[in-house]
Length: 511
Ligand SMILES: [Zn+2]
Image (cartoon, rainbow, N blue to C red; front, side):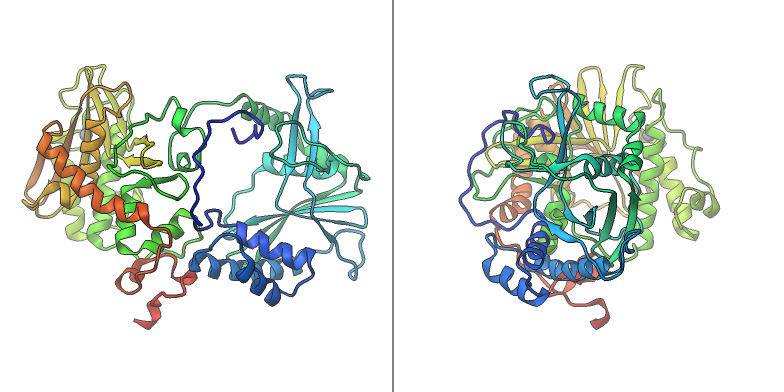
C-alpha cells in the first residue's frame, strides 16, 4: 500500500481532536524548513515553530526536536567538501522532491513505476546531495546497498516533482540538467554523526543499481507475505487484512478522537508507570542504554531463551531434563552472565520444564509456535492489539496459549491480576482470534524453586472471562482516552530510557 499511494484503500473515520504529532521526524523537518527556506536562525525557527505548529507536540518530542535540529546543523558543517568544489561555496536547499519514472514507456504499461527520494535535498555547482536523517546515530546504522543504489540512481537521473505525491495519477515532473556529481549522506540526530555513503558521477551512480538491486525492487513491487506486528497500528488496510482478524468489542471500549494505534501489554504496563514514556516509545525516539537487570531477571530471560530455542527445533521435539547449560561458562556461551545460585536455579528450572513440556505427549502433527505474536484488530476501539505469547501450540484442532514464568516462590494470588497478559490471552481465546478460529486453552507454567506448576486458567468459564475483562480494562481504558500523555516523574525515571528527552525527568545522577 505504501508504494501505491494512488491505490484505492479502505475509508478511515476522520478524527476531529487535536491529537499529538505521531511522526517523530515531522517537527524536525518543519524547523529545518524554516531555517532553510525562510532563512531564520535556529533560535527564531524554533520559536516560530513552537507558536505556529499545526499539531500539538509532546514536550518529550519537543525536547528531542531541539536537540535533533542542532545536531543536524552541526553534522552538516562536518560533511566533507564535495570533490572539485572550493571551500567557500555551499549547496542550496531544494524544496521539490526528486523522482524518476522507469520500467516502461508510458504510465499505462504494467511495468511502469516511479522512484522518489524525500529527506533533505541540496543542489548547486552541478552537484546534487541528499541527506538522510536518522533518529539515532549513523555509527551503528547498517549500510543498505539497495537503498543506496536506489537513492543515488534517483539523484543522478531524477527530475523535480511538480505535482502532489499523493495524487492518484502519475507524478508530473519538471526539467533540470543532469548533475555532474551526486552525493548521499546520512546524519544521526542523537550524536550529530554523519557519514558519506556515496559520492560519484551519474555513471557511477547508475552502476550501483545492479541485478541484485533490481531483484529486490521487483520483490517489493510484487508484494509478499503478510507479517502482522507493531506497524499494523498505523496501517490503513488493517480492517480488511486477511491475516489480522477483526474482533469488535475485544477491549470493551469504544470510540476515541485519536488516530489508530497499536496496543500491547507492554504499552499497558509502561503507561501505568508513566504515560509519557509509553508515548515516547510509540514515537521510537532513541533510547539511552537501559539500567542493568537484576540477577533474577537475567536468570529468567536466560531460562526463557533456552526453552524457546528448544521449542524452535524442526521437527518439534520435547525438552529433555538433562539438556541444560550446566555451568556458568555454558551460560556465558549462550550470552548470559549468570553466577553461583542463579546457575543452579536456572538449570533446575529448565530440567523441571522438561517434566511439563507441552510437546511431551504431542502427536507428530502438533503445531508449535514459540514467541509468536497474535495480532487482532478491535474496530470499536480502533486499536490493533498485539499479544506476545511465549508459546502457542495446537494438538488436533485445539490451540493452547502457554505463558511461562520463572518465580522463586509461586504466589496463590489472583493470577490474572498478577500476570495481566493472561487476562489478554483469555480474551483472545474467547474471541476465537487464533489462526483458523476454534477453541483455545490458556495455561500458566511457573518454574519455581520447588518444582514446576502448570495451571489451566479455564479460559472458557464466564466468570474468568468477566474477571479478565475487568483486569485488562484498567490497563487499556486510561491509555485509550489520554490525548496528552503527561509525565509521572519520580520512581518511573529510574529505569526509563528516555530521560534525556524528558523535561520533567528526575535525572539518575540527581538521585
Ligand atoms: Zn519444552
